[in-house]
Image (cartoon, rainbow, N blue to C red; front, side, top):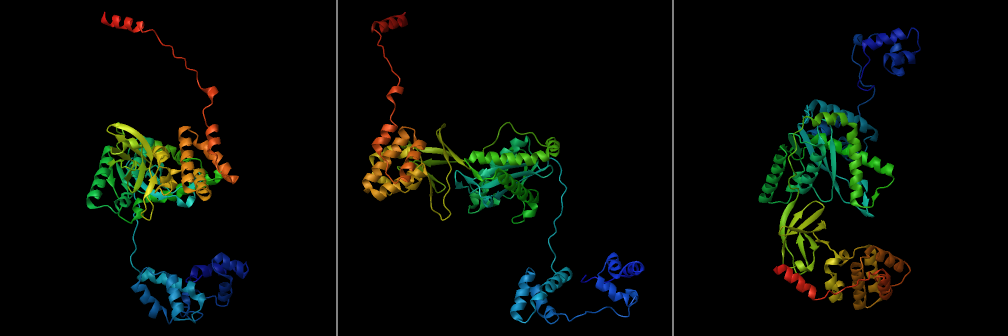
Length: 500
């Protein structure tokens, strides 16, 4: 092999085997090639007794450029890849044989081993049970998950115990934020039944981006308070040094591979709703934990007791409902009932939802929206909140800012496009508003959408009169209410009894 010479021991073995075996067999047993066996058969002397060291058998193709040109490149740019150096040499010397690439790579590797820069050393650590839990986020875009036919842009919050390998994963719809970390971490600890003494994470570095000094300080205080609530010491690895979080970073690939295998066995990456996908992830992680069940049970005995209750895993803010019957939060506009216009509401912001309060009373829960990457505002619209006003001003629908988000299903949007295409704008807007009002008042949104889809497929337009008749209450199903009026003297008896 290149760079290795026959030793005296190999030579003695070869000569011993040569007494009974052919050259090829004896050379193989001695550990070198058949060609070398034939060469040394004619010169049976030991290599150590040779007059001079064996030299090159052919000219060095890099003799004129390695020390003069390649070494200076290696010294000036230590991170330069061998393929980059090879391409540069080919540019400088067009007559350089392409077959010397491997020779150049081996020569560069050998030079760096003797003269290269010192490399970073990873120090393996001893993990103690119950000491360290780690958190991180991993992107899931490459798995192609779809919910209700729409691609799901999401991440997984991933928690892992360093000693036993216990894992927990939580689907995150937004970015890496304190809210996502707090919710996922607490879910993991309560599923585990205890807390480690130390929690390591690099996830807050993403949450710090684009925040001023006061906001970063507030985020740090909230994270410290979260860890203190569970008796954990918060630590973070150095920015950009992923291997310091290696006990969870390396597990990302194994978790995603397990989810990918489960999707292949399921034969589909489509889910009816988000809760179905979350159950799927939970089942996959639970299967991984079952393989480490004995070790996880052993570590549970070393964990700290959980507190009596969870701490907050949301951000709270105050918003004012504008005359548009909504409020804007984090560059997303949310509609609410118009009776709240002018009121100040308290909003608890979670990763996937908003809880809305007026005073101490909870009003509703809204799905959380996201702004667009180009800075454009997002919209979370419930047509039920504004349909009564649209009935008075149907032409407002034509150029409504959030018109596309107003339609509850795709069939409604396509119906409006067909109406605008074939009817005058005023008539089209009036008809569309009537359809939305019918869906709201008769609670027939899904069934009406199916009818509209079939009408569109047939190339027609919806018939409002027929639809109103179809979804009108059936008189036969209406209860018969008989009101019997009591004599007024009964009230005199009641009053006299109260006076007594």
